[in-house]
Structures are given as C-alpha cells and as structure tokens.
Length: 522
Length: 90
Image (tube, each protein chain N blue to C red):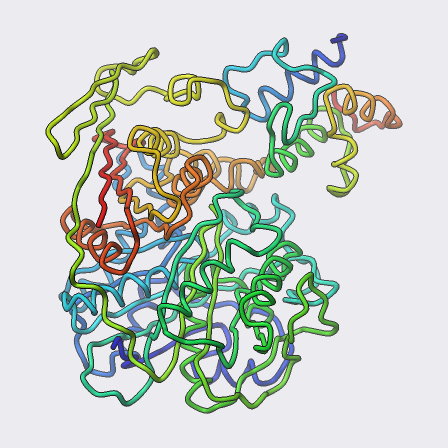
C-alpha cells in the first residue's frame, strides 16, 4: 500500500488516453480546457473511482476556483467561496465524505499524495480520492508575465533556447487504497522539502530539490529509477536547477517532461503527471520531452527527445517545485511502501498565540511567558507586526509581506530555533486574501507588480518562514480541515520520520483575526 | 546624497515597500542587493517596473538591470545617461 486503484485526467487534449496519445505525437502546445473546475473535477473523480466510494477527498490546488474566489474578494461579505477549502468541500460533498485541500504552490501534487499515503498507512483512510485542479485566468497569466517567466514562442523544457513557461489548465484524479494484495502499481515513496533559499527561484545548484529526491527514493527503498518525470517548466533557472539535482541523484536515468505540450497547470500538475506515469509504467513506454530541439542545461543529463521511448524495468521518480522553495517528489513502482513507525509518540512541546497586544507562549512543563508588542494593534486585531517588532531590526524585504506571512514568521521565531529537518504545516481559510485583493485590483489595468504576485499563494508564509528560520523539511498548507484533522496530519509526519512539526492556524485577514501555532516533536 | 539620488531613493522606498526605511538610511554607494540594503531578485523585477513608471526608462533584461541596479548612485547615473524621450515621465 498505498495501491493505485484508479487514475483519470482531462486536458485540452482530451482524456487520459488521448493526452498520452498527444504526448506520444511529439511537439505541440497547451490546448484550452473549457468548463468550471468543480464540474471537471467531478468528471475525472467519477472516471478514476469507477463506481467505488472514497472515504476521504484531498484536493491539490493553489487557488481553487480562482474566478469565483476573485468575485468573493470583491464582495464586502467575503466568505471564502471559490477558494481551496470551498472547492475541496464541494467535491467531497458529491461523495458524502470529508474533504480538504492541500497546497504547496506548484508542488501541491506530491505533497497531497504524501498526505494521502501517510493517512492510508495510519489506517485512518481506506480509499482516498486525490484531485488536482486549478483554474488559470489573467490573475495568473499577468503575474507570471510580470515575473518575465513566459516564453512568447512555445514552452521548451530542458532546451538550450528555452525562455519560459506556458500556462495550461487541466484536472486529474488518482485513487489510492489500502490493499493486502501485492499486485499492481503503488505510490512507493514520497517526500517534501524546502529550499530555505529564495521565494521564487530554486537553489542554483539544485541541492534543495536533490535532498527531496533522495528522501523520496529512500522512503521507496529504491536505488535508481527507470525514468524521471521532471517538473520541467521551461524557465532558465528551474530547468538548470532540476538538471543539476538529477545529475547528482540519478545521473544514469533518462528524463522526460510534459509541460511543453500540456503547459503548466500549477497545483494540478503533480497529480496529472502521476496519472500519466501510471499509464507509462503499465505499458513500458514513455513520451519524450515535447518541443525539445537541442538539449542544453547546467547538469549533464539524458533528456528524451520528442517521440516514444521504451522504458527499462524499475520505478518512476516524479518531482515538482513551487514558489516559496517548496519541493515535492514521489516514486511510482510495483512495490508497496514500507509501513510508518508506530513507536513514535507525538508530543506538543510548546505553543504560542498572538493577539493585538502581544503574545503568550506556553510549554508542556506548565511554564508560560508573555510579551507585548511595542506597536500594539487596535483591540484584539493583530498589529502590522513590523520587522522591528518581530525581528528587532528593519529588513528591506519585510515590507512586501502580508500579515499572514508576518504572523507565521513571528510564530516560528517565538517557538524556535527549530531543527533544519522540521516540517511547517499552515492551516488557513483566508490564505493570502490581503495580497490577492491588491493583485486583483492591478490585473487588467497594466499595473501588476512583480513584487506582489509571489505573495498571492496561501503557502507563501511557509516559504518566508522556511527562509527566515532555516527550516528545510516538508511544507504545505491545509484548507478546510478542522484542528483535530490537521493534528492527525502532524502525527503522520512525525511517525514518518520527520523530527518536528511547526503547525500554525492563521486567519489574519478576515475575522477572527487570529494566529497561533504549536511545536510538536516525536 | 544629491537631490536626484534623494528623489530616486524615495521612489525605491515607496515602490519596493521598504517599511520603516527613510532615504537617510540608504547609503547611495552601498549595494542594493545582497549585503548592503538586502534586496533580492523579486525586488530587481519590481525595480525595473519602478524605473520605467517613474522615469520612462526601460530595462530590457536583467543583465542590464544587474549593472544599473548596483547602488542608488549607479542607478541615478544610469537613468540620467538615457536619452530623453517624449514618453519620459517626471
């Protein structure tokens, strides 16, 4: 376990089979996907489930139903409609089971698969429906354009002349189940990790992603994979960094990438690539890297040219990387994953709460400390949490952070110092709404700020905290899960060998304007 | 800091959201990126937008940006070395 019980995909090129056929055909561009994400998600969910019922839905997404979320932001009564939690709960309602969203920017897919796998190993769930869905509109396209990350010609991952990504919508579903039988394909390994380096750029030497690749292969008890399905966005920095990671981790393994033809589908891409990987492993042949003319990257790796290639035996390694320096990797193979440790007893060592006047920190031994802000907020509303207030000195990159980011960094500082291998989990419903609102106002009127766009993700506070606290374990956000369900995910991480988890609940932008966090160790 | 450097520093502070920093805190000769003021490459992209919006000077790519953005003094000289165009803003 966890055994792959079903997969489905819907892209502008058609269903899973038609999309594989399009990839086999070689070169091409992303095709538009019509329809709202909820309808499309339910369609792929039913196809992947083929009549079975899930007992848990996990949505991998960055923004959910973005046009609906934007309309909600503009409404004075903002209820969070359209956001990740909203979309997850609406998908789950169709199957009468609980559902929440897991986000890790463009690495949402592998992190969501890891959450599902750990819950199955803990025997909390028997059959999990993991959906990848994101809606792409001018909010996204103008943001990436402002970052100068879009190739005006076509997306050419790992090509010497690549000049950026292309966006492409799709939805995908993977059903994972407990299985006593050893027959079939399995999610054999998973890992998350953070660069703790830069908010939008990967580590130049690929070392951040390499650590996550090593961890996923170790979890899978696999030495060398038969194929790497790369993130391959087609930007100069991403592909250089990725090539160096593969060069150091699995230098003999051929590499392919699908974003040339499919485009970058943000939080959905990891689930789509995993669904494609299951077809590829079953038939023993893989499409090469669409639009590649002349491979040219910093790391000397074998990039498969467009066309169909026969695969060696062995597992497939898939990786994704996202804003915040959030990385994820999974291994798909024909062996069940090793069980998690059952001997770890999760222990809440300390916890801290922020309010308008200051903070209060308590420890498991019964001791407690208080602090007051030198610039308090009005009533219980959180103050602006300036750098001087939180760090004790001014900081040139502090001013671009919204209150959610500041609150998570402050919580981390108050609970720290944290071991480098710690995880960060952020539970939030309002997410990046403050930054989203400002970016939304600039879209369509030629006023998009490159500095703002990276903060329009609910996981950006995690990236900021990772960079500022030097924390490099898995990082993801959870949307639409109650506090006890979030703590279950923390216990899963600890039983899976993560030494400590900082888990925070932050609603800085909308009532109840709260921020608190707990530090758990194994 | 001379008057045009002062004005540029003010544009940087408001455009880059440099919270609690005043023009007097910025050494015109100090590096803007890394050690020095401590900006990063996201700020570099924003800085290109600021220079275009405020001065009508386009930074074609980040290779040019890297030279131009070395310090407030360097950026001020870079902007003043550009040929004046009808589209130039204040």
